[in-house]
Image 1 (cartoon, rainbow, N blue to C red):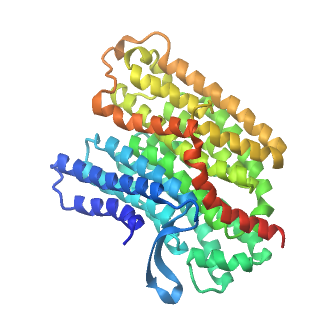
Image 2 (tube, rainbow, N blue to C red; image 1 turned 180 degrees about the vertical axis):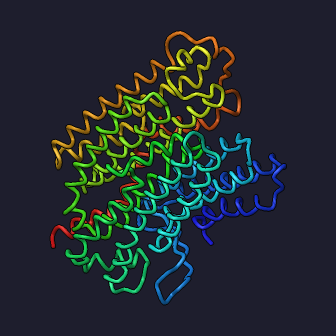
Length: 493
């Protein structure tokens, strides 16, 4: 077994080991969970460092036949796209488990579900067999139900039910298209590299792509919060525990975008070219509508939730361009938004643990009492607004420049969305962190010592990628180039 398999196996093994640890041994539970995600983070970092960018393509491949007669195999590997997203996921898994260790109620069960949520996320991004991409996708969605339904807050029962129904409906739509793809290729296999190689010479019939691509786009677009299927998401954020909100915003949404890139655009480029003008217009609705709704919210988790839905519009706009600049920028922005969104929810969770309120009008002046957390909160708000120096700026700039050449009016609408984002973020910073400090918050404690580590890790990576985008972009371009070649080949047909 290679490093990619061990990357998946580590949190899975950690989850299994936790089953045999007594629930009153909290330190053992925390140590095993932290060790399992730490191994994954180290392996993801080593994979990123050792990846041969000159050669490109899929590397570090493991393949074990499972049902050969149907072309189903455990097949994993990395290229420039999923390598960057795996690194992001490993970082967020490490930070998420660190924060999860603060859970007081039924810690053992919480960590088990959380680790298997991580396994599902890592599995989707590393699988090279369509059957297992879908299998791990469902594996990632299933633990979210108990994590929010049991450990969530507020209207958690309604939120979990709505989330489950929306994501299940989307998954069923995508499954119809993927099963049809299996039979249409005539290759009797779910192996992704085999299908990619075959359609490079003989593209799928346009009549098939015309109806199959929108099923993939909408099916996986539901988890990307494609308008108007976005309403489950902010409610899910608000009800979820902090660490679940972090993975929800940072990783789960990116799984849908990744699947659209890999299975939609990559395998059905002609269908993508046909439908992407519609997607570009919907993307602008995502950006502006969700941005204006975020502006009206008073609950900080709802503000961040609608803000995340708005930012997903930039990802959808970037995908719709089908150009090198926009596609590379989209993957880069997925990495940046994952770190930024997770940091935002982590900081809100830290403050909520002490104040037991998320209403920004109840806070005020917190910057005086918790300067470290407040400073990171302001930096996160500026990153969300697209301020230069943060990775979000690079991704958004590439997407907007790519869109300007292809969808001029949509690009103008997306730029307007940046103004809206800056408006509600500055309003939030002013209301929550500035002004007089209410006397009831005099007992607040700032992050100290090791508490600062997860927040510092996220902001450091966000700034490093913002100042040095060359750390990621050459890797990303090796992964997007084969997809772009198939898009250009289809355009010549």
